Image 1 (cartoon, rainbow, N blue to C red):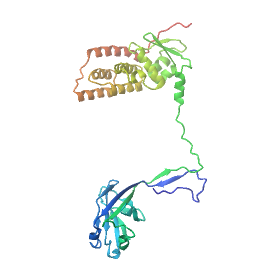
Image 2: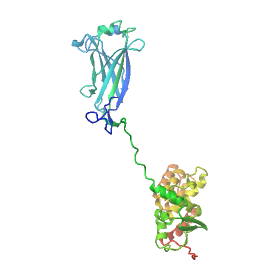
Image 3: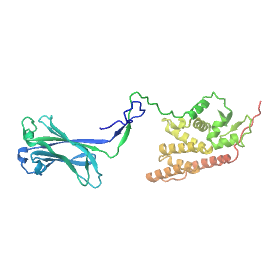
Image 4: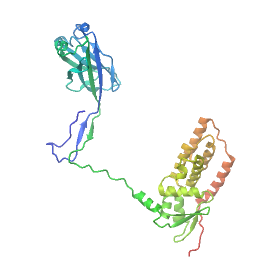
Length: 378
């Protein structure tokens, strides 16, 4: 493929950049054997033999062989042309072509090529070489291009695609510096806090189990915790143990919430490939917890996991009830689509509804200040 380096005038070796102006190209080759050459010779000036078509870049191409010349002025020479079948849906195209005469064993005996890329369009769809080879030379024993009364022509067409691109190239003696590293500022801060080296400054109780965390980290990810820790839930300076389960969130689900807050990912309890039923239950509980603590991104991540991995004939009703109870339209629609496709009726489950009503009723406590269990300071 042709290209020329782009450098300042005078070829200054201190140039700090380099590029190549490169035209994308597509090449195809077709071999055309003309049999009974002695019989077709003499068919008349301007008359040609047409090859079968071959395809390059979605276009049909043909080879035209003029044994008695393209015109009266060129009757002493054999002519070869490359022609394309032009259709309105095709744009004009530029192409180079090469014709080679092959010997009996496939060796190249004679070669000529176009001196430029020719434009194929509605005005001209055939380009070639009128004086490709003198007929006497073609038929000479020295050239050995005619064998068994046949001639084999190899045609190579190279299409220049429309778009020109500039490709960066390395220049000798220059050093390419790497791109600026991605920021790890936030990841480093979270990793340090999760390591436990920074003292925890808040404790949470969920069904009798105690969890320690950092007030600022937890509050930054949840408006619910922000209200609890920096609003009207805890007074500054108090060393309180906050009961944050509310009868809705259990220890395992809360552990998953903390994992998300510190790692920005779902916990292993819902991503592990083992025990699908246990993962399903854990995802439902985490979905509830995310809604309870107003962590919208975590809630949607759980909804996506439920929709992609757990909707089935036996679970679609339960998941649909959870989606409706916790106002997740995307998960509701996924359940409806599945039910319609499978012919399943989404009948309300009394047990599921009863449990959800109880949980939702307890969850209304988040509208007011979350409760805390006050302990006397030492």
